[in-house]
Length: 151
Image 1 (cartoon, helix red, strand yellow):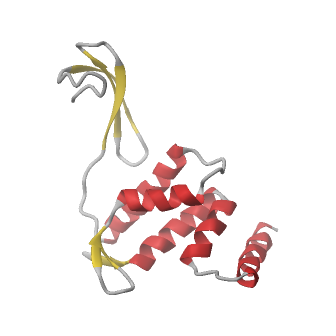
Image 2: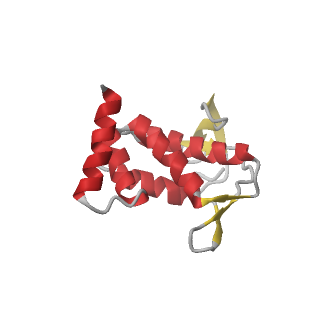
């Protein structure tokens, strides 16, 4: 593992912990500059190809999903850890399907369900784009549904 500060190749592991998605976090110390940093490890499992509405196919892109969720959660009290956890849940659920190819709608559906549990404002922001809520009336109907569910 290269030190992100001085690029030295050798470091020692100070601490190891596991997250809820099977990932491993290691605290390291560079043997040259003595600065500390974290590294993360996760198993690389085959995610299915994503078939898009226009007929094209692409590999599942964890960062693309994370970007969209981060935009929806901008200026909301949602931590980066919560966003990473949601992205990990979506990726894990896709892998558990065991299918070589899934529709982009499946990815969107999984993300929107997770956002609904995480933050309702972020959910509405994501839903406006994902569900195509293109006028104030349809947005209000979705908000009214959320308010009914809360009661």
